[in-house]
Length: 204
Image (cartoon, rainbow, N blue to C red):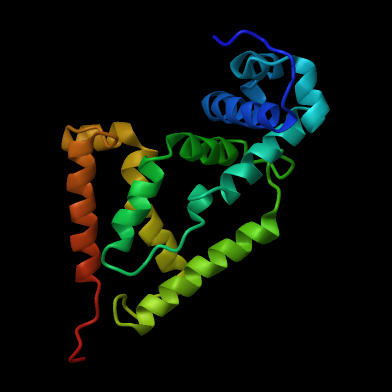
């Protein structure tokens, strides 16, 4: 445990609070997280959280915003083309389990007034970009054109992330934990092969 310290570098203190809050919220969700616990994780005084963020709800929203805008956060990067893109999606999620847990907690706290349901327009734009990516892959013959691109996106994301969303089911079905390197490499090869089968034959 890091001993509490006085604030000397405001930006560094803010970064430490955000990192500690991301860990706390990903483990306990918004309702279960405690500001005192976040302060202990950060090794800073609780008052600094109020100073920088104003309170728990604003801190939660700041954590989600920071995770979405950082490199790779919220799948901000372009996925590339199929058949490799599905394995790319899987690897992004596998390498960032705390982000996945944050999204799961947000889904569990499904009321309309849940803190953190912020920047919805920005999130819709990002998913619209993903739907446009599916349409481009369809136009290139790497995905079937007879399927609705928005629903196809959901299907592809589901295929790429299901073992990580429900790791106990993955262990029951395969006998392997999805976060191990052996299982990851095997599943990535499967996703690449699966995506290759979706390509439209060039002679059609």
